[in-house]
Image 1 (spheres, rainbow, N blue to C red):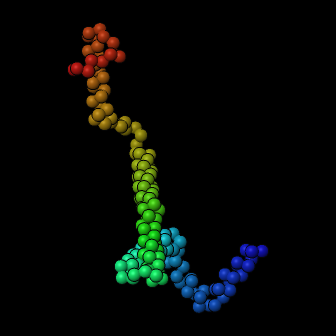
Image 2: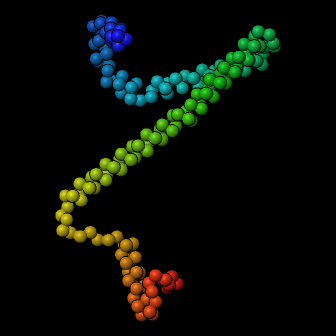
Image 3: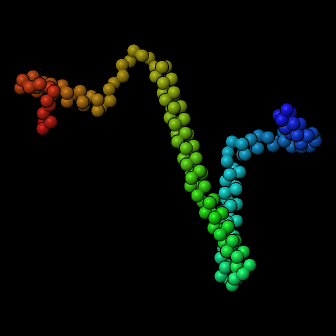
Amino acid sequence: MIENQELKEIESKFADEEAGAWMEEHMPELKRQYLSGQRLLYQSLVISIILGLAAHVGGYVLLSSAPSGLLGLLADLLHALGWSLWTGAVVAVFLQIAPEVKRRQIKQSVNAYEALRRERAKAVGNRDRAVPEKPDGKRAERKKDQTRLRNRARKTGKSTKHRDTSA
């Protein structure tokens, strides 16, 4: 029942041909800017910081010039409102916006790495499997060291479990 009422309200808003045409024309931009991003949040935080700083400075100027009474109270309230508004916006930036940006960067990096792995796997799948892969330099060095230690242990009669690291 409630869904039908909401649907009727939405239909009545776009019953005008001009409004419907405008929405059709601007829908991709609206989706891209407002739905997928956090543009409204960023705009409201910037406005909060600007208004908060203005109110904070205005309240400070009024506090320094107004003696007492009702004007002093209003100046103090304006000063406190400005302070709380701009510091709250700054805190929101550090607690919500910055971690969200970092999360998106990490997600993009992980997606790029996974795409690179898929491309490499396709390339390996396309190569001829009959060609054996050569071990990298460190692995080959390690094998040489192990062989040398085994040979030395055979000559001296010692076990390979207790390796001589002084050589």
